[in-house]
Image 1 (cartoon, rainbow, N blue to C red):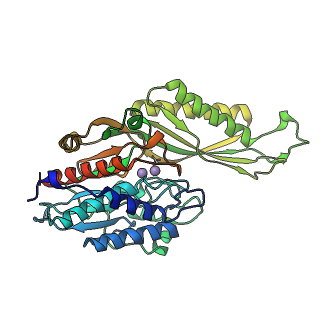
Image 2 (cartoon, rainbow, N blue to C red):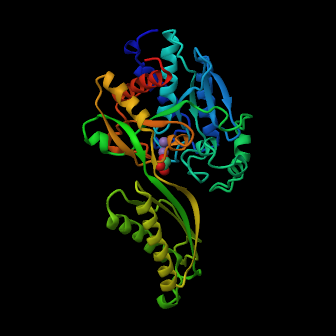
Image 3 (tube, helix red, strand yellow):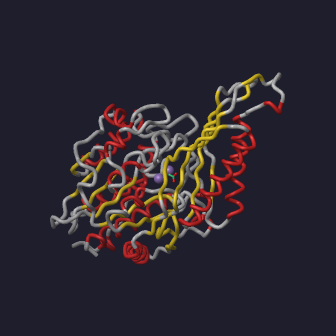
Length: 413
Ligand code: GLV
Ligand code: MN
Ligand code: MN
């Protein structure tokens, strides 16, 4: 077969596809807004499917909308799978997720052009609702695919706009017939932007992702009573916004105090009735806690729980919590991490082991097959923001490392 050394991705073609997919759902401020199962998500999917078809891939869709482009191998074995997601947060950039999918297609195109048929089949996956902004939990598609949630439970999820996962999936025409998990990969490797500052600050090496931190998402509802802002004495108030403000400060201070890998975020707050001269009767707040260590993450959750009890006692507010997502830290397959490192070494490209701060589809695939990830630097560490950027040379290098890794995992090196 052709020597892997002579196979390189076309960085310009990859960037062109990233720009074209990035234009779907683009807002005036430059944000990519393709929340899961919206019309923009459908348009993005249609575009990716058209590219898969142009590349001669067999397209299959499963019951939760996960999409697969399959390429035959010389032998009828379990495929080597790559891919990621194309849904975005409402203020996303054009690289988060899309890079992993489009670099997979670029790798396929290079193999097609060079007439290379790999030993194992290849599969390029697009997983549903990775971001978890519209429907929680995040990474729903890959979670179901890996057997972590029944299909019926996913289809019944209710979104932040009160829509139903299954109904929206039907509406956009991506409720497929395939049973999730029907194709069990030989291995899974995902290329993604780092979405943090480490690689950029260290001078632009790539990352071989060896593990991924645990994620705890909760919703906290604080209920008080609405009343007149001018006439209600301070001592008689049950002000839900005040409780929310104390919770926000607590989450930030807790993460600072615990230090290490602990992070904590309140990313969403909704007040009712949200009017200038009315004391809010309700605040709905989300809490995102993450840590690489499960014990420390549990400790942070316990601290939050006791804070909420004290807050209710001190303010007279009624507090209720609801779990939105909970995933333990994941260690990726050391053998697959080494294959990635060897692929980078063969290209003369420095690569360092690292942790993923973000949730990823690969963490779910790790439940069913050896999995790992390749990171490319994010300029300034910015992501979930329209300013998200990666240098074109890093996109190309990441795609080249992906291509070599796919070949090696398929037994073609
Ligand atoms: C997904 O991007 C997450 O880590 O929240
Ligand atoms: Mn992502
Ligand atoms: Mn993301």
